[in-house]
Image (cartoon, rainbow, N blue to C red; front, side, top):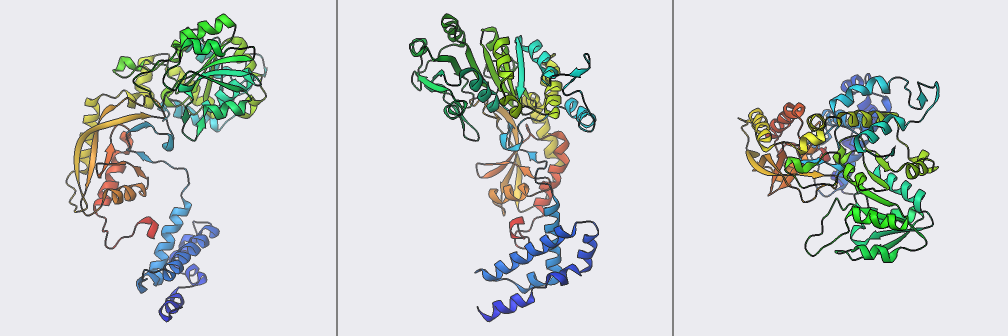
Length: 480
Protein backbone atom coordinates (compact mmCIF):
# COMPACT_ATOMS: atom_id res chain seq x y z
CA UNK A 1 0.00 0.00 0.00
CA UNK A 2 1.39 3.44 -0.89
CA UNK A 3 2.95 5.41 1.98
CA UNK A 4 0.56 8.33 1.63
CA UNK A 5 -2.41 6.01 2.21
CA UNK A 6 -0.78 4.59 5.33
CA UNK A 7 -0.27 8.14 6.57
CA UNK A 8 -3.92 8.97 5.97
CA UNK A 9 -5.07 5.86 7.83
CA UNK A 10 -2.94 6.87 10.82
CA UNK A 11 -4.69 10.26 10.92
CA UNK A 12 -8.11 8.68 11.49
CA UNK A 13 -8.99 9.15 15.20
CA UNK A 14 -9.99 6.10 17.24
CA UNK A 15 -13.49 5.40 18.48
CA UNK A 16 -12.41 6.19 22.06
CA UNK A 17 -11.00 9.58 21.02
CA UNK A 18 -14.26 10.45 19.31
CA UNK A 19 -16.36 9.28 22.27
CA UNK A 20 -14.35 11.62 24.49
CA UNK A 21 -15.00 14.63 22.27
CA UNK A 22 -17.21 17.23 24.06
CA UNK A 23 -19.85 17.31 21.31
CA UNK A 24 -20.11 13.52 21.25
CA UNK A 25 -20.27 13.40 25.07
CA UNK A 26 -23.12 15.91 24.94
CA UNK A 27 -24.90 13.83 22.30
CA UNK A 28 -24.58 10.73 24.51
CA UNK A 29 -26.76 12.40 27.13
CA UNK A 30 -29.71 12.39 24.74
CA UNK A 31 -29.04 9.38 22.49
CA UNK A 32 -28.55 5.66 23.17
CA UNK A 33 -24.85 4.77 23.37
CA UNK A 34 -25.29 1.96 20.85
CA UNK A 35 -26.61 4.43 18.26
CA UNK A 36 -23.70 6.85 18.82
CA UNK A 37 -21.13 4.06 18.45
CA UNK A 38 -22.82 2.80 15.31
CA UNK A 39 -22.71 6.31 13.81
CA UNK A 40 -19.00 6.59 14.61
CA UNK A 41 -18.21 3.21 13.05
CA UNK A 42 -20.17 4.03 9.89
CA UNK A 43 -18.42 7.39 9.41
CA UNK A 44 -14.99 5.84 9.99
CA UNK A 45 -15.74 2.97 7.61
CA UNK A 46 -16.75 5.50 4.96
CA UNK A 47 -13.43 7.30 5.43
CA UNK A 48 -11.40 4.06 5.21
CA UNK A 49 -13.24 3.10 2.03
CA UNK A 50 -12.57 6.54 0.57
CA UNK A 51 -8.84 6.24 1.30
CA UNK A 52 -8.80 2.83 -0.37
CA UNK A 53 -10.55 4.29 -3.43
CA UNK A 54 -9.12 6.02 -6.43
CA UNK A 55 -10.33 9.56 -5.60
CA UNK A 56 -7.81 11.41 -3.37
CA UNK A 57 -8.96 12.18 0.16
CA UNK A 58 -8.08 15.59 1.55
CA UNK A 59 -6.51 15.84 5.01
CA UNK A 60 -9.30 18.26 5.94
CA UNK A 61 -11.80 15.35 5.86
CA UNK A 62 -9.66 13.58 8.49
CA UNK A 63 -9.67 16.42 11.03
CA UNK A 64 -11.38 15.39 14.24
CA UNK A 65 -13.84 18.30 14.25
CA UNK A 66 -14.93 17.49 10.68
CA UNK A 67 -15.39 13.82 11.56
CA UNK A 68 -17.37 14.75 14.66
CA UNK A 69 -19.72 16.88 12.56
CA UNK A 70 -20.25 13.96 10.21
CA UNK A 71 -20.90 11.65 13.16
CA UNK A 72 -23.55 14.03 14.50
CA UNK A 73 -25.20 14.15 11.06
CA UNK A 74 -25.11 10.36 10.84
CA UNK A 75 -26.62 10.08 14.33
CA UNK A 76 -29.49 12.29 13.24
CA UNK A 77 -30.09 10.07 10.21
CA UNK A 78 -29.96 6.87 12.24
CA UNK A 79 -32.40 8.26 14.80
CA UNK A 80 -34.98 9.04 12.12
CA UNK A 81 -37.81 6.52 11.75
CA UNK A 82 -37.75 4.52 8.55
CA UNK A 83 -41.43 5.26 7.87
CA UNK A 84 -41.95 9.02 7.84
CA UNK A 85 -43.91 11.81 6.24
CA UNK A 86 -43.02 13.04 2.77
CA UNK A 87 -44.36 15.88 0.65
CA UNK A 88 -46.00 14.44 -2.45
CA UNK A 89 -45.40 16.91 -5.27
CA UNK A 90 -45.68 14.32 -8.05
CA UNK A 91 -49.28 15.04 -8.98
CA UNK A 92 -50.17 11.36 -8.61
CA UNK A 93 -53.09 11.42 -6.19
CA UNK A 94 -53.30 7.74 -5.22
CA UNK A 95 -49.53 7.16 -5.19
CA UNK A 96 -48.94 3.53 -4.23
CA UNK A 97 -45.29 4.11 -3.28
CA UNK A 98 -46.21 7.09 -1.08
CA UNK A 99 -49.00 5.46 0.91
CA UNK A 100 -51.96 5.81 -1.48
CA UNK A 101 -54.96 7.60 0.00
CA UNK A 102 -54.78 10.25 2.72
CA UNK A 103 -57.27 9.90 5.53
CA UNK A 104 -59.72 12.70 6.25
CA UNK A 105 -59.32 14.94 9.30
CA UNK A 106 -62.53 13.52 10.75
CA UNK A 107 -60.96 10.05 10.64
CA UNK A 108 -57.68 11.16 12.19
CA UNK A 109 -59.50 12.83 15.08
CA UNK A 110 -60.90 9.44 16.12
CA UNK A 111 -57.57 7.60 16.13
CA UNK A 112 -56.07 8.64 19.46
CA UNK A 113 -58.97 7.70 21.77
CA UNK A 114 -59.52 4.35 20.07
CA UNK A 115 -55.84 3.45 19.64
CA UNK A 116 -55.02 4.37 23.23
CA UNK A 117 -57.98 2.67 24.86
CA UNK A 118 -60.12 -0.45 24.81
CA UNK A 119 -63.00 -0.79 22.37
CA UNK A 120 -65.93 -3.01 21.48
CA UNK A 121 -64.00 -4.51 18.56
CA UNK A 122 -65.53 -7.98 19.00
CA UNK A 123 -68.00 -7.33 21.80
CA UNK A 124 -71.73 -6.79 21.41
CA UNK A 125 -72.77 -3.95 23.71
CA UNK A 126 -76.45 -4.76 23.19
CA UNK A 127 -76.13 -8.46 24.03
CA UNK A 128 -73.27 -8.33 26.52
CA UNK A 129 -71.25 -11.09 24.82
CA UNK A 130 -68.75 -11.70 22.05
CA UNK A 131 -69.67 -10.13 18.73
CA UNK A 132 -68.22 -9.77 15.23
CA UNK A 133 -65.77 -7.10 14.11
CA UNK A 134 -67.46 -6.96 10.71
CA UNK A 135 -70.65 -5.44 12.12
CA UNK A 136 -68.88 -2.09 12.54
CA UNK A 137 -68.80 -1.55 8.78
CA UNK A 138 -71.24 -4.05 7.29
CA UNK A 139 -74.30 -1.93 8.10
CA UNK A 140 -72.79 1.04 6.29
CA UNK A 141 -71.69 -0.99 3.29
CA UNK A 142 -75.19 -2.41 2.93
CA UNK A 143 -76.79 1.01 3.39
CA UNK A 144 -74.56 2.75 0.83
CA UNK A 145 -74.50 0.06 -1.86
CA UNK A 146 -77.66 -2.01 -1.48
CA UNK A 147 -75.65 -5.21 -0.93
CA UNK A 148 -77.28 -8.04 1.00
CA UNK A 149 -74.10 -8.70 3.02
CA UNK A 150 -70.53 -7.52 3.34
CA UNK A 151 -67.20 -8.07 5.05
CA UNK A 152 -63.69 -6.64 5.00
CA UNK A 153 -60.19 -8.13 4.84
CA UNK A 154 -56.75 -6.53 4.75
CA UNK A 155 -56.55 -5.67 1.02
CA UNK A 156 -58.25 -6.39 -2.30
CA UNK A 157 -55.75 -9.08 -3.26
CA UNK A 158 -56.80 -10.93 -0.10
CA UNK A 159 -60.47 -10.34 -0.94
CA UNK A 160 -60.03 -11.92 -4.39
CA UNK A 161 -58.00 -14.84 -3.04
CA UNK A 162 -60.44 -15.54 -0.21
CA UNK A 163 -63.50 -15.35 -2.47
CA UNK A 164 -62.02 -17.67 -5.10
CA UNK A 165 -60.73 -20.12 -2.51
CA UNK A 166 -64.16 -20.29 -0.87
CA UNK A 167 -66.36 -20.45 -3.94
CA UNK A 168 -64.24 -22.26 -6.52
CA UNK A 169 -61.49 -24.35 -4.90
CA UNK A 170 -61.06 -27.54 -6.93
CA UNK A 171 -63.43 -26.23 -9.60
CA UNK A 172 -63.32 -24.01 -12.68
CA UNK A 173 -63.54 -20.24 -13.04
CA UNK A 174 -64.27 -18.77 -16.48
CA UNK A 175 -62.55 -15.46 -17.25
CA UNK A 176 -61.81 -13.40 -20.37
CA UNK A 177 -58.21 -13.37 -21.65
CA UNK A 178 -58.46 -9.62 -21.98
CA UNK A 179 -58.96 -9.32 -18.21
CA UNK A 180 -55.94 -11.31 -16.97
CA UNK A 181 -54.41 -8.24 -15.41
CA UNK A 182 -51.27 -7.64 -13.40
CA UNK A 183 -51.25 -4.84 -10.84
CA UNK A 184 -48.43 -3.36 -8.75
CA UNK A 185 -46.28 -5.76 -6.80
CA UNK A 186 -46.66 -8.46 -9.51
CA UNK A 187 -50.17 -9.47 -8.37
CA UNK A 188 -51.53 -11.42 -11.32
CA UNK A 189 -55.00 -12.87 -11.72
CA UNK A 190 -53.69 -16.23 -13.07
CA UNK A 191 -51.31 -16.56 -10.12
CA UNK A 192 -53.92 -15.76 -7.46
CA UNK A 193 -56.30 -18.17 -9.19
CA UNK A 194 -53.69 -20.91 -8.88
CA UNK A 195 -53.07 -20.09 -5.20
CA UNK A 196 -56.80 -20.31 -4.51
CA UNK A 197 -56.95 -23.88 -5.84
CA UNK A 198 -59.32 -22.93 -8.64
CA UNK A 199 -58.72 -23.87 -12.28
CA UNK A 200 -58.74 -20.93 -14.65
CA UNK A 201 -60.58 -21.35 -17.95
CA UNK A 202 -59.60 -18.58 -20.38
CA UNK A 203 -62.08 -17.52 -23.05
CA UNK A 204 -62.06 -15.09 -25.96
CA UNK A 205 -59.02 -13.19 -27.17
CA UNK A 206 -57.01 -10.28 -25.80
CA UNK A 207 -59.16 -7.68 -27.54
CA UNK A 208 -62.51 -9.43 -28.07
CA UNK A 209 -64.61 -11.72 -25.91
CA UNK A 210 -68.22 -12.60 -26.73
CA UNK A 211 -71.02 -13.99 -24.56
CA UNK A 212 -70.92 -17.25 -26.52
CA UNK A 213 -67.28 -17.70 -25.45
CA UNK A 214 -68.37 -17.85 -21.83
CA UNK A 215 -71.33 -20.10 -22.54
CA UNK A 216 -69.27 -22.60 -24.52
CA UNK A 217 -66.78 -22.87 -21.64
CA UNK A 218 -69.41 -23.70 -19.00
CA UNK A 219 -69.25 -27.30 -17.83
CA UNK A 220 -70.13 -29.49 -14.84
CA UNK A 221 -67.12 -28.17 -12.87
CA UNK A 222 -67.77 -24.47 -13.48
CA UNK A 223 -68.14 -22.67 -10.14
CA UNK A 224 -67.82 -19.01 -11.09
CA UNK A 225 -67.94 -16.58 -13.97
CA UNK A 226 -65.30 -13.94 -13.20
CA UNK A 227 -65.16 -10.38 -14.50
CA UNK A 228 -62.05 -8.33 -13.74
CA UNK A 229 -62.12 -4.57 -14.23
CA UNK A 230 -59.02 -3.58 -16.23
CA UNK A 231 -58.64 -0.42 -14.19
CA UNK A 232 -54.89 0.05 -14.74
CA UNK A 233 -54.90 -0.22 -18.54
CA UNK A 234 -57.23 0.13 -21.51
CA UNK A 235 -57.40 -1.75 -24.80
CA UNK A 236 -58.66 0.59 -27.50
CA UNK A 237 -59.64 0.10 -31.12
CA UNK A 238 -61.12 -3.19 -32.37
CA UNK A 239 -62.40 -4.39 -29.01
CA UNK A 240 -65.44 -5.93 -27.39
CA UNK A 241 -66.25 -7.25 -23.93
CA UNK A 242 -69.40 -8.73 -22.42
CA UNK A 243 -71.45 -6.29 -20.32
CA UNK A 244 -71.79 -7.32 -16.70
CA UNK A 245 -75.59 -7.49 -16.99
CA UNK A 246 -75.35 -10.05 -19.83
CA UNK A 247 -72.84 -12.11 -17.87
CA UNK A 248 -75.18 -12.13 -14.86
CA UNK A 249 -78.09 -13.34 -17.03
CA UNK A 250 -75.88 -16.13 -18.38
CA UNK A 251 -74.93 -17.12 -14.85
CA UNK A 252 -78.57 -17.18 -13.78
CA UNK A 253 -79.40 -19.40 -16.75
CA UNK A 254 -76.93 -22.04 -15.55
CA UNK A 255 -77.13 -21.38 -11.79
CA UNK A 256 -73.55 -20.06 -11.62
CA UNK A 257 -72.72 -16.91 -9.61
CA UNK A 258 -70.80 -14.03 -11.17
CA UNK A 259 -67.88 -12.48 -9.30
CA UNK A 260 -66.78 -8.96 -10.23
CA UNK A 261 -63.33 -7.75 -9.16
CA UNK A 262 -63.65 -3.99 -9.46
CA UNK A 263 -60.12 -3.36 -8.19
CA UNK A 264 -60.21 0.31 -7.24
CA UNK A 265 -63.92 0.52 -6.63
CA UNK A 266 -65.74 3.80 -6.17
CA UNK A 267 -69.00 5.01 -4.65
CA UNK A 268 -69.30 8.26 -6.60
CA UNK A 269 -69.89 8.82 -10.31
CA UNK A 270 -66.79 10.68 -11.51
CA UNK A 271 -68.43 11.49 -14.84
CA UNK A 272 -70.51 14.12 -13.04
CA UNK A 273 -67.22 15.95 -12.41
CA UNK A 274 -66.26 15.91 -16.08
CA UNK A 275 -64.11 12.78 -15.94
CA UNK A 276 -64.14 9.38 -17.60
CA UNK A 277 -66.94 7.24 -16.22
CA UNK A 278 -65.73 4.54 -13.83
CA UNK A 279 -68.09 1.69 -12.89
CA UNK A 280 -69.48 2.17 -9.40
CA UNK A 281 -70.05 -0.49 -6.77
CA UNK A 282 -73.75 0.34 -6.70
CA UNK A 283 -74.12 -0.23 -10.46
CA UNK A 284 -72.49 -3.65 -10.29
CA UNK A 285 -74.71 -4.80 -7.42
CA UNK A 286 -77.86 -3.52 -9.11
CA UNK A 287 -77.07 -5.74 -12.08
CA UNK A 288 -77.27 -8.83 -9.86
CA UNK A 289 -73.62 -9.75 -9.39
CA UNK A 290 -73.10 -12.48 -6.78
CA UNK A 291 -69.84 -11.20 -5.25
CA UNK A 292 -67.94 -7.99 -5.77
CA UNK A 293 -64.47 -7.12 -4.44
CA UNK A 294 -62.63 -3.78 -4.34
CA UNK A 295 -60.11 -1.73 -2.35
CA UNK A 296 -60.86 0.40 0.67
CA UNK A 297 -58.26 2.96 -0.32
CA UNK A 298 -57.61 4.01 -3.93
CA UNK A 299 -60.80 5.64 -5.31
CA UNK A 300 -62.75 5.05 -2.10
CA UNK A 301 -60.27 7.24 -0.22
CA UNK A 302 -60.11 5.20 2.99
CA UNK A 303 -57.50 2.89 4.55
CA UNK A 304 -55.93 -0.11 2.86
CA UNK A 305 -58.57 -2.83 2.97
CA UNK A 306 -60.32 -5.35 0.75
CA UNK A 307 -64.10 -5.12 0.68
CA UNK A 308 -66.32 -8.09 -0.21
CA UNK A 309 -70.01 -7.47 -0.93
CA UNK A 310 -72.74 -9.61 -2.39
CA UNK A 311 -75.49 -12.11 -1.79
CA UNK A 312 -76.07 -13.43 1.73
CA UNK A 313 -75.24 -17.09 1.12
CA UNK A 314 -72.01 -16.32 -0.77
CA UNK A 315 -70.65 -13.76 1.72
CA UNK A 316 -71.62 -16.06 4.61
CA UNK A 317 -69.56 -18.87 3.07
CA UNK A 318 -66.60 -16.55 2.57
CA UNK A 319 -66.83 -15.27 6.15
CA UNK A 320 -66.75 -18.82 7.51
CA UNK A 321 -63.58 -19.72 5.59
CA UNK A 322 -60.67 -20.34 7.99
CA UNK A 323 -58.48 -18.06 5.87
CA UNK A 324 -60.64 -15.14 6.96
CA UNK A 325 -58.92 -15.00 10.34
CA UNK A 326 -55.49 -14.80 8.70
CA UNK A 327 -56.63 -11.97 6.45
CA UNK A 328 -58.75 -9.92 8.85
CA UNK A 329 -58.18 -6.22 9.51
CA UNK A 330 -57.35 -4.56 12.82
CA UNK A 331 -59.34 -2.06 14.86
CA UNK A 332 -57.63 1.05 13.46
CA UNK A 333 -58.36 0.02 9.87
CA UNK A 334 -61.97 -0.66 10.83
CA UNK A 335 -62.19 2.74 12.49
CA UNK A 336 -60.77 4.54 9.45
CA UNK A 337 -63.03 2.64 7.07
CA UNK A 338 -66.17 3.20 9.14
CA UNK A 339 -65.57 6.94 9.44
CA UNK A 340 -64.76 7.23 5.73
CA UNK A 341 -67.92 5.35 4.77
CA UNK A 342 -70.03 7.52 7.07
CA UNK A 343 -69.00 10.56 4.99
CA UNK A 344 -70.45 8.93 1.86
CA UNK A 345 -73.95 9.38 3.29
CA UNK A 346 -73.65 12.84 1.75
CA UNK A 347 -71.71 12.37 -1.54
CA UNK A 348 -71.15 16.10 -1.99
CA UNK A 349 -69.66 16.33 1.48
CA UNK A 350 -67.53 13.25 0.79
CA UNK A 351 -65.93 14.97 -2.20
CA UNK A 352 -65.08 17.95 -0.01
CA UNK A 353 -63.83 16.07 3.07
CA UNK A 354 -62.11 12.95 1.72
CA UNK A 355 -58.65 14.09 0.54
CA UNK A 356 -58.42 11.64 -2.37
CA UNK A 357 -61.76 12.74 -3.82
CA UNK A 358 -61.02 16.40 -3.14
CA UNK A 359 -57.70 16.24 -5.01
CA UNK A 360 -59.09 14.24 -7.95
CA UNK A 361 -62.06 16.59 -8.39
CA UNK A 362 -60.14 19.84 -7.79
CA UNK A 363 -60.86 22.54 -10.38
CA UNK A 364 -58.11 24.12 -12.46
CA UNK A 365 -59.05 27.57 -11.09
CA UNK A 366 -58.51 26.38 -7.52
CA UNK A 367 -55.18 24.81 -8.45
CA UNK A 368 -54.10 28.02 -10.19
CA UNK A 369 -54.74 29.97 -6.98
CA UNK A 370 -52.74 27.44 -4.95
CA UNK A 371 -49.82 27.70 -7.37
CA UNK A 372 -49.91 31.47 -6.97
CA UNK A 373 -49.82 31.11 -3.18
CA UNK A 374 -46.84 28.75 -3.28
CA UNK A 375 -45.03 30.85 -5.87
CA UNK A 376 -45.45 33.94 -3.69
CA UNK A 377 -43.64 32.15 -0.86
CA UNK A 378 -40.57 31.50 -3.01
CA UNK A 379 -40.46 34.63 -5.14
CA UNK A 380 -37.40 36.83 -4.85
CA UNK A 381 -34.97 33.94 -4.42
CA UNK A 382 -31.59 35.02 -5.73
CA UNK A 383 -29.90 31.91 -6.96
CA UNK A 384 -27.71 30.71 -9.79
CA UNK A 385 -28.68 27.10 -9.17
CA UNK A 386 -32.08 27.21 -10.91
CA UNK A 387 -34.90 29.49 -11.99
CA UNK A 388 -38.57 29.19 -11.04
CA UNK A 389 -41.51 29.18 -13.43
CA UNK A 390 -45.21 28.37 -13.36
CA UNK A 391 -46.72 26.22 -16.08
CA UNK A 392 -49.68 24.01 -16.94
CA UNK A 393 -49.46 20.24 -16.87
CA UNK A 394 -51.34 17.05 -16.14
CA UNK A 395 -51.84 15.10 -12.92
CA UNK A 396 -52.75 11.42 -12.66
CA UNK A 397 -55.28 9.62 -10.49
CA UNK A 398 -52.82 6.78 -9.80
CA UNK A 399 -53.29 3.53 -7.93
CA UNK A 400 -54.10 1.77 -11.20
CA UNK A 401 -57.32 3.76 -11.60
CA UNK A 402 -58.52 5.76 -14.62
CA UNK A 403 -55.27 5.31 -16.60
CA UNK A 404 -56.48 7.40 -19.55
CA UNK A 405 -57.75 10.27 -17.40
CA UNK A 406 -55.63 13.43 -17.56
CA UNK A 407 -56.26 15.99 -14.84
CA UNK A 408 -55.31 19.51 -15.87
CA UNK A 409 -53.12 21.04 -13.20
CA UNK A 410 -50.70 23.83 -12.35
CA UNK A 411 -46.98 23.23 -11.76
CA UNK A 412 -44.12 25.01 -10.07
CA UNK A 413 -41.14 24.26 -12.28
CA UNK A 414 -37.49 24.43 -11.13
CA UNK A 415 -35.47 25.01 -14.29
CA UNK A 416 -31.83 23.82 -14.04
CA UNK A 417 -28.88 26.21 -14.19
CA UNK A 418 -25.83 25.24 -12.11
CA UNK A 419 -27.80 22.31 -10.69
CA UNK A 420 -29.16 19.63 -13.01
CA UNK A 421 -32.76 18.45 -12.75
CA UNK A 422 -31.48 15.17 -11.30
CA UNK A 423 -29.44 16.99 -8.64
CA UNK A 424 -32.40 19.20 -7.73
CA UNK A 425 -34.59 16.08 -7.40
CA UNK A 426 -31.98 14.35 -5.24
CA UNK A 427 -31.44 17.29 -2.89
CA UNK A 428 -35.18 17.76 -2.33
CA UNK A 429 -35.64 14.00 -1.83
CA UNK A 430 -33.05 14.16 0.98
CA UNK A 431 -34.71 17.15 2.62
CA UNK A 432 -36.37 16.77 6.02
CA UNK A 433 -39.17 16.04 5.32
CA UNK A 434 -38.40 14.57 1.88
CA UNK A 435 -39.97 16.32 -1.10
CA UNK A 436 -40.88 13.96 -3.94
CA UNK A 437 -41.36 15.65 -7.31
CA UNK A 438 -41.09 14.46 -10.89
CA UNK A 439 -38.41 15.15 -13.49
CA UNK A 440 -40.02 16.05 -16.79
CA UNK A 441 -38.77 18.03 -19.80
CA UNK A 442 -35.35 18.26 -18.08
CA UNK A 443 -36.72 20.19 -15.13
CA UNK A 444 -38.19 19.35 -11.73
CA UNK A 445 -41.96 19.69 -11.58
CA UNK A 446 -43.85 20.30 -8.34
CA UNK A 447 -47.57 19.64 -8.83
CA UNK A 448 -49.76 21.65 -6.46
CA UNK A 449 -52.66 19.17 -6.77
CA UNK A 450 -51.02 16.74 -4.31
CA UNK A 451 -49.12 19.24 -2.15
CA UNK A 452 -51.04 19.76 1.07
CA UNK A 453 -51.56 23.38 2.09
CA UNK A 454 -50.01 22.59 5.49
CA UNK A 455 -46.78 21.73 3.64
CA UNK A 456 -46.47 25.01 1.71
CA UNK A 457 -44.17 26.75 4.21
CA UNK A 458 -42.00 23.65 4.63
CA UNK A 459 -41.68 23.22 0.88
CA UNK A 460 -40.83 26.89 0.43
CA UNK A 461 -38.05 26.58 3.03
CA UNK A 462 -36.68 23.50 1.25
CA UNK A 463 -36.56 25.38 -2.06
CA UNK A 464 -34.88 28.37 -0.42
CA UNK A 465 -32.28 26.08 1.17
CA UNK A 466 -31.65 24.51 -2.22
CA UNK A 467 -31.12 27.97 -3.67
CA UNK A 468 -28.23 28.46 -1.19
CA UNK A 469 -26.68 25.08 -1.91
CA UNK A 470 -23.08 25.36 -3.13
CA UNK A 471 -22.28 22.39 -5.35
CA UNK A 472 -18.54 23.12 -5.12
CA UNK A 473 -18.23 22.85 -1.34
CA UNK A 474 -21.25 20.91 -0.14
CA UNK A 475 -21.66 17.16 -0.48
CA UNK A 476 -24.81 15.20 -1.10
CA UNK A 477 -26.17 12.97 1.69
CA UNK A 478 -24.67 9.93 -0.05
CA UNK A 479 -21.20 11.47 0.11
CA UNK A 480 -21.30 12.48 3.77
